[in-house]
Length: 318
Ligand code: AKB
Image (cartoon, rainbow, N blue to C red):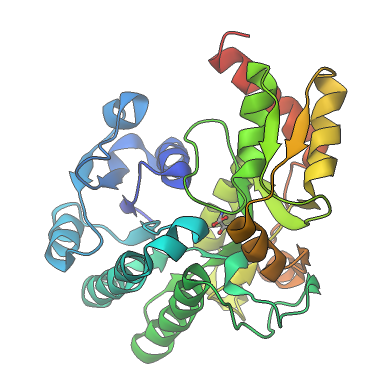
């Protein structure tokens, strides 16, 4: 990867991935693609080039790729699971019509492409414990439908046209820079903000609801390491199971309480979020990622909690 375009650079993952790629490859080598209304700000804006790249506009993608001699695209444009249920047409347009545009440009301009999939690509019929790499994928959400399609279309472009497509199935990503918006796993970010602000956290999921999670530094490392690995090591491409931890609301609450003893949580179950979470795995088996490209997370729930609380306390002067 010499010149990289990040589509969706101002989102939860994009904002931190763009900065990490700039640290590793050089500021001028990484273009922050954004849509009108979600312009880069602060360090993201100042540290390197940016361009308006709406994933639904094929010409805009192609002209940016040509202008900056791009050879790798991180395509992060997508609606998250809860919001995709209320805007299914938009979820398809951004997630799949957009992906089609990215893959077509990649085919013509010979770019590698990373497009994340998710634990949301699985459904109720999938084995929920130690979910295998290759298993049933019959999701009942629009988000899941777009993610399975993402995996299939990305594999198709690799098999048919030789486009270097690679992907991981992200679990819930926990971060302290840009908030996520409209996901089922967002509660695991929101709970830290509530703890640091001294608020009672209203948990939208039932006790015992297990889902895979990961701290942002591990997620960034996964996306970059997979794109850097020698392709001869890859038996799979789209998409690898990866995980760092699996917990339920009462477990993350108890972990935070070790450091913020006065913290309080109450339950007010959101039926849509609960039904989505119930259809997703409890914990993934990520052996293939470990074996094929050396995936190994650094953070567990405890070390992540210490870091999250420290960063958020600094952010809110607490
Ligand atoms: C969501 O909750 O929608 C996302 C995901 C797990 O893909 N964070």
